[in-house]
Image (cartoon, rainbow, N blue to C red; front, side, top):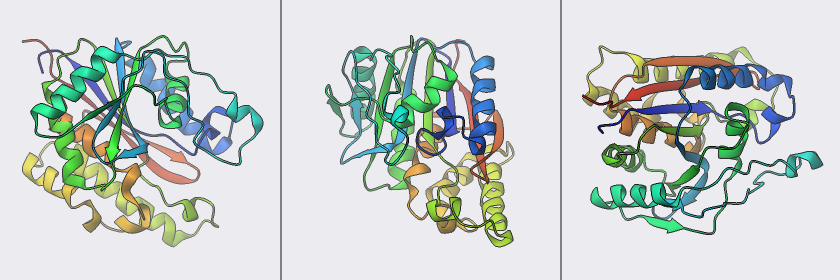
Length: 271
């Protein structure tokens, strides 16, 4: 990758709640706003959302995608949120080609809109909605090595000033979010977060070990308590596959009472 790419994994919170003034998301809102203020404004944004799974990697390719309000039981204003960012069909085509070159079948979807894994965090980070956006799906097997390979395939992209966001959640146990707080749950949450931070951020760790740990993430302390289903972790695997190195920055925020991590990598750059 000859051009610099910013790569960011975020914990995106619960549905539209970050946009509704929910106090359990205050740290998350502050953290995303802080991150956006430090990054250069991107020319385009690629989002890998935890809320889209397909049989093969699929990319939004419409010029003016609508929004998908893929959440339930929230106030009426939740379904009136607007984020009219344009699509970027040329970038979508480049992503599909990069995946195909790596032996990963890919598909363009010119009809699908943007789900809340894109428009909720981006409305916080880039409220003007003036940056072209593309979404890339997960693969519905949720196989860790497949998502690492998807990230590696994206290394061949050469798109000036691209921001890649893995939009997931480093802790995603819905029952635990809405249960009474217990010291045992806190300890399990913190142990997994510590493992994940070491895995993603320790500069002394060989990349072969880092990749092996992420490939076998379910062997981490309390992995299946923190992720009964792993769709919210897989965007991190795509981000690391693209970066191929220790993160440059780790941030932590309490979201809905649980410790949650975010990771930033700067990748590439002209020689």
